[in-house]
Length: 348
View (tube, rainbow, N blue to C red):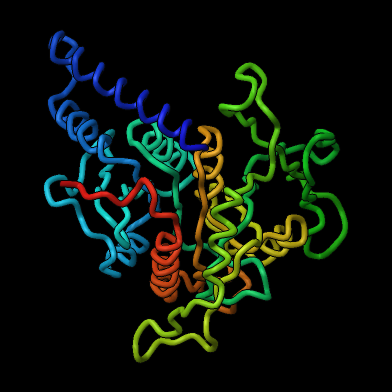
């Protein structure tokens, strides 16, 4: 989105919030809660100081790791605003103004929060971050990935054993291939992997595109490439360390679906079929929603577990905090690489 488009979007947001406040004040019988009115008033005031970088993470361990860095400095008068059940934190990171929110687990939470953020706040783009499973044997727990594209691998056409998946599906998985012992049919049939219906500001509102892979913003991905080689933590504490030094890799692929994966066979299927590395439950929704609205977006994920390929229990609880910490530090360094124009003047 260019500067002219961003300015136009910001003007629309400010006018919309002003109109909503006027209506509530003039027609109090509408019954809009006072808390929402106060929130809209703060947002309108803060938007005049924008644009902000939107930061979206998912659940408490990721949030804790981000705030533990000490990089986030809250706004002195308005450190947060509550809207539609979510807390949006206002502040700065590396001298750049940000709006931070925790969206909650899953595609719906991620998409709803991203749309809410884009509709109400004056943003220059969105950085999404969190931890993820790892489907790529060349990557290790503790590594951080900044994928070039994401797909929703949970949009299925689930067919009976003798059914035929639609011809426009990307690929299919036959359950009978996983029978033990091998041979025979399987009543679960097979899955066809379908595409998203993608509505966007540049598309036809009556005829959505069919899209499987959603690319993050190229300019931001190019900036992110400068982070390769950055120092990442190998140890969570003196008694818990990884066997090798973690690395950051830019330009791989990511899979998103509404499931927590801890199954070696399905992990291998996803890697062989789509060549994905990160496995999570939100990234594709944040990327798709941002692109739909015409905003820059990037997603950064730390690998916390092997998604079922490990011996014994899943390691997300053990190494999740370390992966989250490495991810948070990568996010901070990425923010530092972003251009300073239009985002650094003082709040007061």
